[in-house]
Length: 343
Ligand SMILES: [Zn+2]
Ligand SMILES: [Zn+2]
Image 1 (spheres, rainbow, N blue to C red):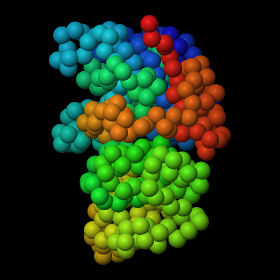
Image 2: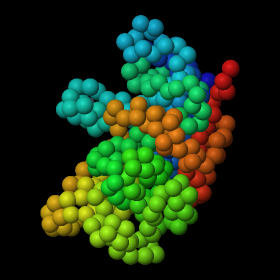
Image 3: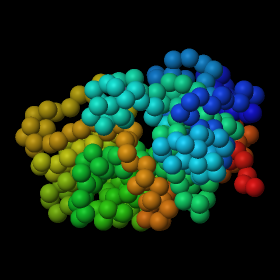
Image 4: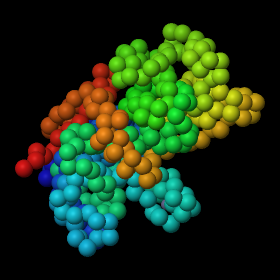
């Protein structure tokens, strides 16, 4: 079978791989669609600090059909089921796992980062990490449930409620999906980014407010939109120094802040303001138990995730698309590769 392998910095190819063995507790998935994540691009660029060795098969946003499974499994997964992979493999024994925070497992393994990923024709995955999807969902939309999980986890982390404002910093896939999720929650998203084209895109998705800190006094603008209060919630999805720092200013007194973006280094924050405003700042990583909601949001159309798909290509073009995404990140949001056609 074929798979997409990154062999070193700036080098990716379609390679021949052995068809995976199906261990006990695992199912064999015939992969139908897989999308490229920013993580995959950073692996290709050689800037993903979590990748310890090359070559590595990339990919963790993956949907397919169950081809082989123990029919007596306790999760009700059957041969022929359409599924999306929950790609965060956890130990189940450590402290965060014992608290149900499997997304923060001390020995978390993400597909395509800590171990070979699922951007290949067939993939073997634990049965309990398969999430069923309805039959009438187009294949290219299903992998988007994974980034949407991360976005929704950010909204859950800041406990966003209907009617509240949320400043979402970073209009990439995660930020835009979070904006759509906030609309589904009847909240008021304000998306901040320095790239004007991305803000235009956000507005075309129905995001009511956008701010560009490179062009305007974004803090003043947020205060105006929120009638002087500041935003009840902030979700940081850029990982940039300025983005993280700005949450403190956008947030209302007693505001709730979720930090989803991964900064490349330590960032200094004015802790006096955190105390003065009694801000609640929480990390927000991956997601746990949130796939069902994400699938339902996409399926019902309440989150029109397909709007962030820039291109759907046959999987053989994925290595080329990785270099495109690496060189022209502004030109694309999600690129989805198709591995099989139905029938
Ligand atoms: Zn991803
Ligand atoms: Zn664990």
